Length: 590
Image (cartoon, rainbow, N blue to C red; front, top):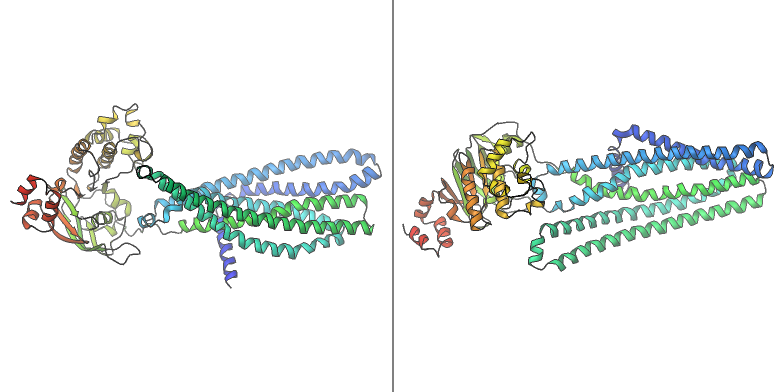
């Protein structure tokens, strides 16, 4: 039952795969015409061997001697044309399928929920896009090419063999049960090994990505040897699995060829003993029998490609079948006024049993600044991640201008929000394109210059060789941390959203960079509702409201002075942070 189920699943999976080639069926039909020409020329060539030997060499017929060379040239001319149509047609379809599959996977990646990336499941995505898709494309194009092209050739040659001497041809029937048993054994082994190869490629991609992204940490902590060992383990596993696959293929093909050679030997022995077949017929029969081994061998090996493609399809379609971010809303707003309210919000991360947030409530009015403070793990970043719906609250409601964010479309909701984090991602493009990131239409040059000036980007960009058109490098690594942060602020200014999230926007900067970034942030926060996460409490003293979190709950809230006067959690955090500062002692005593 399980074998039948596996076979059914494989057939459904392969039909789904072939669906990507269906839009290009007319090009593939042209390729099939070429395959027919190849098959016909193969059968035609073997058929010419009979008159060539009997009438040419034995009877010395002049007409036959003149005609046969010309026919051979014409056959191979037709074969050349057929070969071009078959190979170019299938390659064209294959490249289109590769493009479509990669595009489909990448498009799905762009809309996968945040939990997918943060669960670690994203480690093999690069391998799937680069390696697995190639295996899928081979399954879509190479397999039909072999099955149709070599299948037609096999049928044509088998038909000719039966026509010449059906008794001798029956000897080849001995191959059928042997071939079936070998193919079945190879099929199971190929699938298991192919799955392991896909996994090993994902492991290699993961190690390379982590070592590349964290190259400074690797160098600083002397982790090169550790990363090299991890890479070598993945590579060795990949090499081992590939060699197992090669061994299965080599042994299986060797046994198939041995069975074919035994059958051919029996045919030759039987033909020589019988004496009922002419030299021309025997030569034609022998050429056809030898020629048929090539298509037979390729048809036997096509199963390897099928199993590899099915293994790749399992992992690739697993990504494509992942549910995208849930679109629950239908309300569109052009520009919110900026009131944000959390009502009894609760949340826990997928796969965990403990709430990260519990009964969190607060409100911030348009244009106000609300600061979220608390020890690490208190839920600050989770709170701001819920606002743009990177995650959905499990309980309670979050409202913008009295509208539940779940009622807003994702595009409309995120259009209202700009985000500046501690480590802002820049893309390997120009400063200009990074500031205007997400702009589908033409860039507003005056608005971009205003944003760059306000964020103090022009102060360093004008000293660069290409100004705002200077490329920032991968992840912006050609720039300093302060410069990257100012570009991120300019990006938020250019977006001009009514709600702003600042997540530790200055915590990793030196004094001079922090001064410039703080000046840029003050301009960014003007007339915007701002939610600020900060470890350094000195940066949020002037916030309109401070919400203090402890273990996922609101411990207290109020202004800086109110909270100090209350002498609660906030006052304790403030004293701990500034205990060595005389000014802090003076403030805490007021």
